[in-house]
Image (cartoon, rainbow, N blue to C red; front, side, top):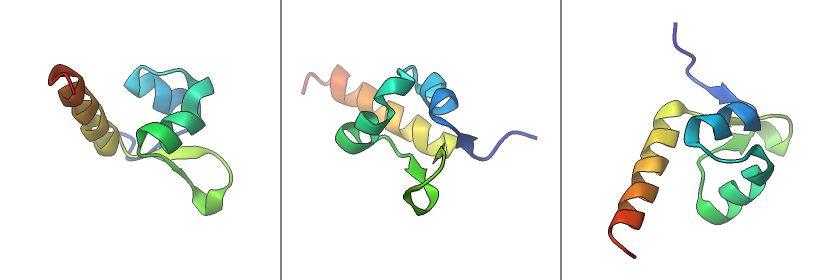
Length: 65
């Protein structure tokens, strides 16, 4: 069965090709759709949300904006 939720900065950033050290900035400044439960513990993200985020980033960069 495929995981329905990625957990931890390493696995989330590996999925989107980013550096785990930049996780907080990616969320705060770039809108990466990840969260911490009760603002504590490990980062979590849904694969479909990450895919949509990557598509938006791609489209934004391809449009030259």
